[in-house]
Amino acid sequence: MNSLPRASSSVWLKATYKATPQDFYVEEKMTMEFSGEGEHLYLFIEKTGQNTEFIAKQLAHYFGVKPMDVSYSGMKDRWAVTRQWFSVYVRNRQFDSIDLSGIEGVRLVELARHNKKLRRGEHVGNYFRLVVRGVSQTADLLSGLEYIREHGFPNYFGVQRFGRDNQNLERAKRWFAGEIKVSRSQRSFYLSAVRSYLFNIMLADKVQDGTWLVASDGPLYGDDAPGLAPKTDEENAFFAQYPELVRGLHKNRMTLARRPYRMPAENFSWSFDDDALTLHFNLMPGAFATSLLSELFDLEDASTRQMAEQ
Image 1 (tube, rainbow, N blue to C red):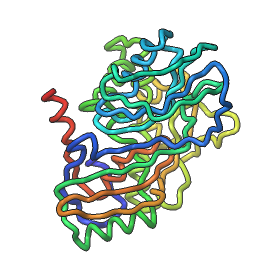
Image 2 (image 1 turned 30 degrees about the horizontal axis):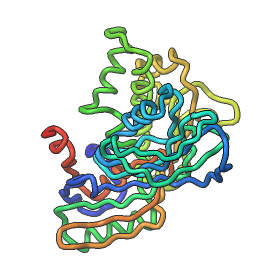
Image 3 (image 1 turned 60 degrees about the vertical axis):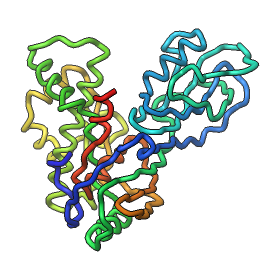
C-alpha cells in the first residue's frame, strides 16, 4: 500500500494502528427486515481477536450443523472488535437459550429468525471507529482530513487482499506459470489477488494524472458480461501489458466486474486526544479502511507484532 500514489498533498506522517483490538472497531450495517420465523437463525455477534471463518466453524460445531450451513455477509478483521451477522440453518429447531460463552472472544448481541439464509455482500456497509496513535494535530494533517471528507479517497484494495508479504499474489503467478498446484479452496484467494493487483495499478495511474475523481469505475479483469459495460480500448491496452496474468484469469473463466475508483467516507469525523487520533466513518461493502488511513499515514500495523507474540 505504501508504494501506491496518494491523492492528497498532505505530508505523509508515521503512525501506528491496531495497537489493541479495541483501536479497530467495525460494525456491519444491514437493512434486512427479518420475518421473525423460518429455518434460519440469525446471530449478531461481537468478536474480539478472532477471524470470521473461525467463528463460523465454531457456530457450526455449537449448533451441530455442517460448515456450509453457516453463512455471513462479509469477512472482518481478526485483530479488531467487530460486530457482524451470521445465519445458521437450524431447520425448525427451537432453543430455550443460546450460550456462546465457550467460544473465546465472542459475545452474542442479538438474535432473529428469518426464512432466507444470509448471502455474501448482503450488508449495505460498515461503520468504523479507528484509533491511530503517535500523531500530532498539525495543520497539514487537518488539511488531509478535510480533503478526505470532501473528496473521499482512492478505492485501492488493501494489503489484506494479497496475503502476508504478498504471498497470494506471488503464488498465483507461480500457479499460472505451472510451477505449483493449488487446491480449489485456494484458487479464489489467488484469482482475487491478481484482479485486485491489476485494479490497483490502473487506479494508481488515475491518481497520478488526477482523473480518479472524474472516472466512475474500473474493471476487475474478466470476460465481458451481459448488462455490464464492456472493457474500453484503454482498459484492454492496459491489460495487454500483463499477458501472463490475463491468460491465467481467462483460463479460469473469470467474469468482468467493476469497482468504483473513488470511495466516499460518509459521516467522516475525527477527534484528538494527546497523540491519538480517533476517526469515525462509514464505507460501502468491499472498501478498505486501511486504504483511507494510507492516504494520511505511513502505517505501522502493531497487530503483526502482537499476534506473533501470542
